[in-house]
Every structure is written in C-alpha cells, then in structure tokens.
Image (cartoon, rainbow, N blue to C red; front, side):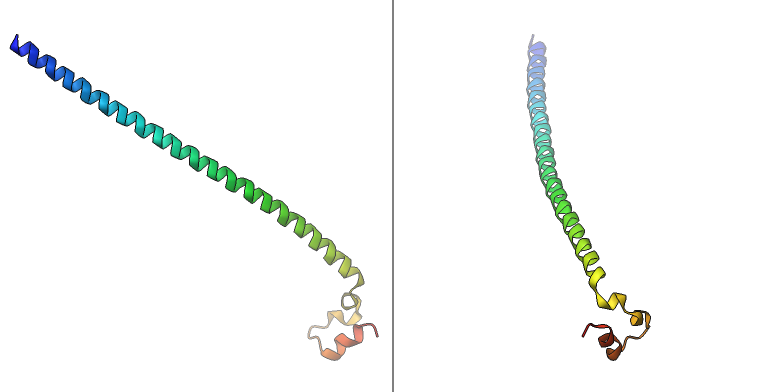
Length: 99
C-alpha cells in the first residue's frame, strides 16, 4: 500500500512537471510567432516605403530625361561642328555660342 501511494505521488509530480513544461513550451512558441508577425509587419511597411521611393525616383528619372532631351535639341554646343575636337579650347567653345 505504501509503495502504491509513493508511485502515485511520483506520477502526480511527474504530470505536474510535464504540465508546467508544456505551458512553458506553448508560451515560448506563442512569443516566437508574435515576434515573427511583428517582423513581418515591419518588413511589409519597409517594402511599401521602398516601392513608393522607387516610384518617385522613376518619375524623377523620366522628368530629367525629358529635360535633357529638350536641352539637347537647343544646345549650341551639341550642334557645333567643333564639338568633336578632343581638347576643347576656350576660344573654340565661345565660337559655338550664339552672339
């Protein structure tokens, strides 16, 4: 009878210990999932921000390309016959400019 009572006590302690360990494990899993979810949210926000920045930079690049194209049409230095001289001299450059 005494031995059965001792075994029952051991089983109860073991079950309690197991229950506490299972609770700790579940809590740890939940914390890990929460942390991953927070990281996911943060990365989503960063991704959205970077996409917005890409859009702005793309628009700026298009605008600057148009400005450059417009400038190339009217730039006297680009249309000057002396433009292909390898070493530009100040008098060569001023001769291309409109007077």
